[in-house]
Amino acid sequence: MKKDLNYSLINKIMLIAIVISTYLFFDYAGVLKVIVKLFWALTPFYLGIFLAWLMLPLGKVIHRKTNFSLKVSNVLAVAVNLIVVVIFLLTVVPLIAWQISSFYSEINTIISSATTSLAKIIEYLNLDSTILNDWVNAINTTEVIDYAVKLVSGSVGAILKILTSTFGVVLQIVFAYIIAFYFVNDINSFFKKIIRLFSGKKYERNIKVAYEMSDVLFSYTKGMVLVSIFIFTADTIGAYALGIPLPFLLGLIAGITNVIPYLGPVIGGIPIVLFGLSVDIKTGLLALLLAIIVQSIESVFLQPKILGKKTQLKPTSVLVGVLIFSSIFGIVGFVIATPSMALIGILLRHSKYDVRL
Image (cartoon, rainbow, N blue to C red; front, side, top):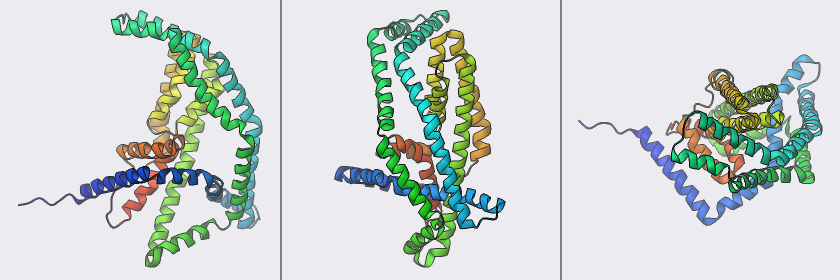
């Protein structure tokens, strides 16, 4: 008796084949470059739409707590968000710029001290094989230090370049908030009109799917912000308590990189450990312990509690999403990969093929 075909597996294979074929075709035809340029050009528009959508729950809270109408409350919610952003730009950004400048000026000393501590740890553990000895000698060479300085300064330079293009950034933020103020009271009807345009007779079902997508995206955004704030606060306080230089910058790096699936905690923890080793071996080991404890709390308690299982994504799907979106959108792709795959997953689950990522 023949076994039934595993249509779910066949659907997944076909889906992957279609995605890869489409990507290769668009990349070969140069369409991807046009899409990416259009993506960046429309940044104020979809950022404004995103802000308007994100402020709707706060508008409802203001409406419940005051005598203001819902429309006025929504506008006030966007205004509150704008005030918070302005305060952030006037207070936190200068601090970040100062710490980046200090990091750039002290990088030679930090790398030299950290590599010396690493060499001592390896020597203490009696790991004196030829490979390890060669590695220790290598990391003490001027060439490797110079390479690390160029690598870090290149990243810092890219950040500074973004920060120094003040006029363009401010202009985009202004346009985004203008769009947010304009759309905040019409955001739901705006999306409903788009859904109706492409739905036909399936309008009611697609509305339910859209609400599910909105719920998942909002839960993910809120949860990720809360988790990142915890990482930033815990690592900053911990680094400051241990006497590690530039604790605010290190905590900020850990909080931001945490949005990158799987690799983020490692990327964010490495600078803390290296900066700890630049002080001495004991501080470096305590910094390692700090990074492990903070990330353990995040992954074991906070991630399941705050983020839950809203995305319903398997680890392989997340990794595939990271590879695809990062190759198209660069650093931004790492950030949008998981929520984008979650939304794609909802659409596929509600399709006639019922494909689950």
